[in-house]
Image 1 (tube, rainbow, N blue to C red):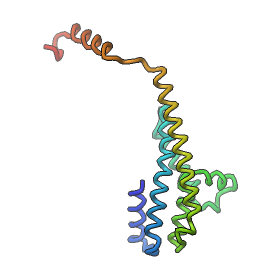
Image 2: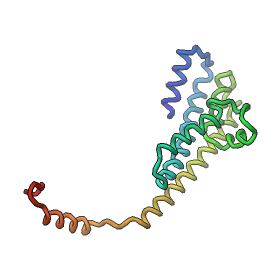
Image 3: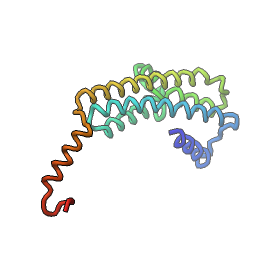
Image 4: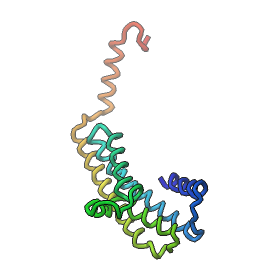
Amino acid sequence: GAFVSAFSLTAGVIILGIDIPASAIAPLALVIAVAAFSCTGLGLINAALSLRIRENAVLSNVIFGFLLIFTGANVPLSELPDWAQTMSDGLPFTHAIEAARELADGASLGDVAGLIGTELFICVLYAGIGYALLREARSAASATAPSLTIGVVDVALARSASIAGAGSQSE
């Protein structure tokens, strides 16, 4: 995530001629790293939910589309309805995107420290929820899964060997 963001930013600077102050490069790198970790927390939640449902690709695409609309990535937050603006405050990327835009406009790291702090809080919150959901899913799976021991495997292999017939690997 961080590499793709840094590459996209570099490509945007080169291709589109975006002017970013040199003093903003290090703070932008920090914001990109924080955003990547924030997204990782959301990824843990996605992974945990994917253990419960079968269509992970659909869920991932819905989350992706949701983020594009509600984080200010593609639609300015000011143009969203009030309820959507409120919801966007709790999503990963929202505050990192705002911080990155302000840094590119010449703001200092101190000016965006609150946004970065909020994004870090969201990162920790989502990572904690994702970790808890993964642990719960693992516990649920362990409770219902049959136990597989070496003895069970030995018996299965012995049965397989005894019924091997013409054309089998055992010949």
